[in-house]
Length: 292
Image 1 (tube, rainbow, N blue to C red):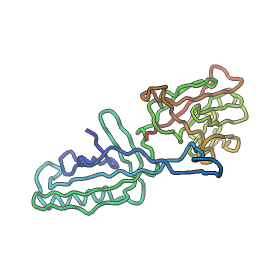
Image 2: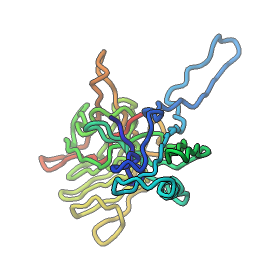
Image 3: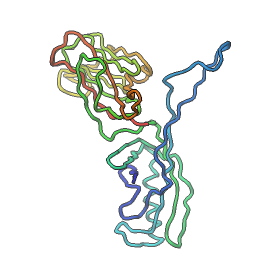
Image 4: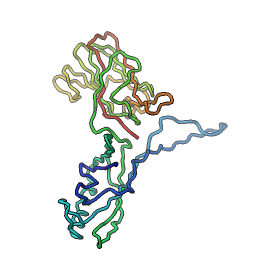
């Protein structure tokens, strides 16, 4: 049975103080932001690829009851206490909240904000109430709860990033780490052709760190994923060259593709290249899978 948790609070209370009702549906697929390009003398429209997706909303139907946290019946007074607790859970406005969707071993998380709540339908006789909260997912995608790290070759064509297998949405906030020696290191997302490179060299033991979401890069002489400049970390953002869809806003959208005729086979492929490499040279990618 699918369950939801908001900021760590189960929306199916273990004692039965409240529950997400059957009316709460599975997360919806995001819509595509509409763009049409028509030109005189040509029938139809010019096809436009790589369109952005719209933010999605999810209605969560909650039933509250006059049950105390210890499982005993507290009547209408406890119902009011439970509704106030729910108001605190759904009433956060100063930050994004974390909504967790769980079904079996599948866990997905999204940063959300509560857009609106309906009027509470109160039935004082049996001490129960019902309302609907509409949560908005500004970032569109659901994610894995924690990041994973993949290690591959600094020189490899169409390498599958195995830790991203099964994703259905592009990963736009990955961290890349290239370990030298490597001259002119380049990484390409096979699905879109997006490319990121640094036309310079890395010595043995040096690492190029790239934050695709923040569009920042650093060169480190220590084993770290932290791009913050310091004695052993130097900012090299100005050296980075990025091309491809969305590269003006975020670097290297790692996009999953499906196998021919097999939608269960979804994988992110990257091609990496560099010269003057050795067995110590490698490419690592850290991030969380994204889902529509």
